[in-house]
Every structure is written in structure tokens, then in C-alpha cells.
Length: 322
Image (cartoon, rainbow, N blue to C red; front, side, top):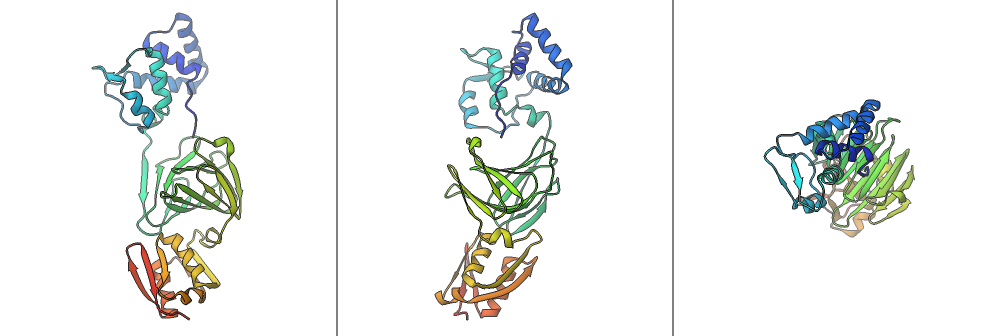
């Protein structure tokens, strides 16, 4: 989420490490390192990278890196030298910019965990945030939230109950954009086919924006929803985020089976259809706690004498219903 623009300090590091710095520049860098412990830590990290005996491989490859990397070749010590017309100092700056400040992945040695759900699974992140991960979804998060922000990435759909931390905002990255909060409850749904994200807020407020367009972020309050694709479109949230609490409680009050199944579809990521069109108009009242969708369907099926037929990603309720 942060821009990686080379600073004066970065340029001084590059010049000193490559031997291109003047005496005045070397003195300036030394003063900056002595005055600011964070800059000293950054310098040490880059120095380790520059002096590494093995090529650096532990970073996320991007299209930009792939294009630029065609112009480099490692020498025997593992350092990377760029072909002309780039100078060595400028080359190191470009590595710093494209690598997302490589020391974040090497110096910090942060380990990420990726959890993939087969059904509807509940997990707690290291900061105490509770996540209900829907079927065929995945979330990636660090073993410890040590950075200035609590960053995770999501594929699929999930409900979040974010642990409050005024010092560190919680940021979810998807293929399309970002969702940023301090502490709240909300639902995020991603769609690979349409390249859209849906966010529904049930408590608190969140900021959402599309990648590369952070200046046009939108703030959502409880009851708001938004669709993210090339821009952000605000709307009113439907009832799913409000109903599905993070203790896994579902309640239906005199609702049509069509609406009941829409809710269950979002939880199970499967299409639920009726063999008889009239069955969808039947009304149902009931509550469920900590039960799987398959168990909920069995209860509803027994009430209306449905036969439940599962076919890959489709569930068919066979019977006339009410």
C-alpha cells in the first residue's frame, strides 16, 4: 500500500555502498545514521543485502521486476550489476524501489501463513481478529503483526471482526483493491470472474479504494455496502452481513425460502436451486448456532419434505415445499 519512492537517504546509501559517494556525501550519511536509529537500521539492512554472498530470491516477483531483470547478471559474490546506461548507484535505487524495500522480507524475516478453507471455517489472527472464512476462500497473514499496519490478503469471501488497535489499522488487500479499518465488523466478497469486490459493513466504519486510486477512497458506515472494480460504487448493504454474526448465528423470521437460500449461498459458495418454482415462495422461521450449511439444509429439508441433491457446485432441493 505504501509508495516506494527513493529518498535522499536511499541515494546516499547507494552511493556509499557502490563507492561513488564524495567525502561530503559520506559524512552526510554518517550524520543521518547517528541522528536517527531507524535510518541506521535501514542502512545496516541494505548493507547486508549488498554484501550478501548468495543471490536474493525471497521477494515477490512483479511484472516490472521481470522486465528489468533481463538487464542484470550476478557476479561471483552475488551482487547484482546493471548493464549500461544505468549507473550502479541508480541501479541500487531501482532495486530498492521495485523490491518494495527488500529488507522488509529479508531483514525482518517475517513468516506468512496462508489458510485455505474447504468449508466455512473460523480462525483467529495473531492480533485477536476473528475471521469466518467461507468455502473455497483463503487468507494470508503474518505470524506477528510487527509492521505499522496489520496487512492481510484475501481471496474468496470472509466475515471480519477486527480487534481494535488505534495505533495499527487493519488492511485487507484483494486482487482489486483495499479495505482499511481500525476495529469493526464487515463482510468482504471477491469475484475472480467479474473482477469485483463487495464490502458490507455491519458495525463501525471502513475505508475502501481501488488499487492505484487511493485518493478516491470511500468511507462506509454500518449498513453501507460498496462494489469495487475500476471505481467504488456505494449502496445499501443487504441483510447477510447483519445476520451472520461472528459467533456463527443465523436467524430467519418469516422469510421466503428464496431469500433464505441466498443467504446460505453466500456462506457456502454454492448455488442452491429448487426443483419446483413454487417452493421458493414458502416462508420459514428458525435460528441456527454454530451449524454448517449442510446441517441447516437438512433441518429445512425435513420441515418441507425436500430431498437434498448435491451436484458439484450446485445444491438442488427436490420437492413441492409448502
